[in-house]
Amino acid sequence: MLVRPGAQEPKDILPSPVTELATAKINLALHVTGQRADGYHLLDSIVTFADIGDRLHFSASGEDVFSLSGRFSETLATEAGSNLVIRARDGLRSLLAAAGFETPPVAIHLEKNLPVASGIGGGSADAAATLRGLLRFWQAELPPADLARLALSLGADVPMCLQGKPLIARGIGDDLTPLPDLPRLALVLGNPLCSVSTPQVFARLASKQNMPLPPLENGDWIRILPTLRNDLEEPARELAPQIGELSVLLDGEGSLLTRMSGSGATCFGVFASRAEADRAAARLQALKPAWYFQATTTVSGA
Ligand code: C5P
Image 1 (tube, rainbow, N blue to C red):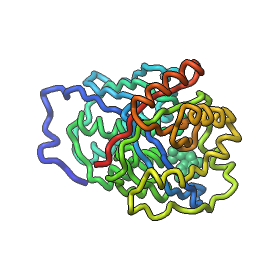
Image 2: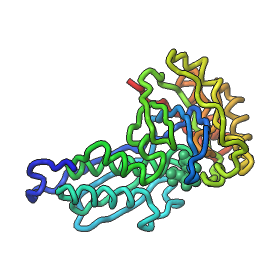
Image 3: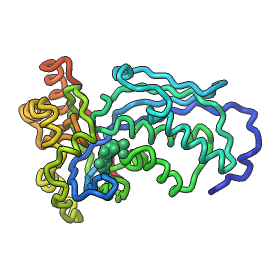
Image 4: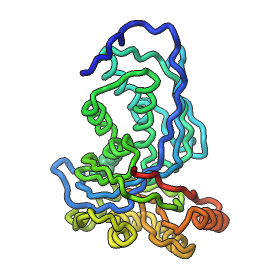
């Protein structure tokens, strides 16, 4: 464990408030290549992140508090143990306390802007942002390997959300290789607001042994991405037929490439420009007022 010099000296000044964005994770491709003995699936995935997401705010408080706001706050469990923000806070606190850091009570506010259980990271991104935000708030640090282990214990997608940059994820999603040359993409995210269960989608997979990603060293993404797949799309469509309808709508708006992200039901369309993505999102929202649509630009890998 790494112990910062002076970490045990009491601090007279209250920690300053900290804000973190929990950005939406997008699987541009997701190939399922096998299954481990413990049931977890082996993946080959190209992942990037949007410039929109949930917002977490951390501030000094007499006791630990967790509050919620935002469009999707109603659907989120706040019970300790089930909420990933609270589990991330508690897991980090016990590691930091063992390393000699002070971890005073904290008020955490989560503005839940992303649909819940929707294949774009949601809870995993919130957990990763909690780890990043609390390390800043408590002015503490952990050896990267300890932080990565804690992240993985919270969920298979939490380590990639901790990176927040374009990458290839292998293993169960925890073996990460940065993709610095992946370009920024103008996307429309869409969700019919039916949640699909990740374990149920995996359970319906016809084949667990599919082709891995091809070699990607030449970086000709516009040519490569359409040749890749999301192996979870077919089983997710069986559970939620609206995913098919959503994909047809995105194609109809001129999407250059339409795919589902993660285990769904969120789909994305890649557009030629941000202006085109904005126009498509507005038209789709008018067509389906009860569904979720959001234009976004993905982050740079550089
Ligand atoms: O790790 P996380 O809680 O995000 O995963 C949710 C569920 O998705 C797991 O319990 C497992 O059923 C399934 N899963 C899987 N293989 C992965 C990731 C998730 O089978 N690589």
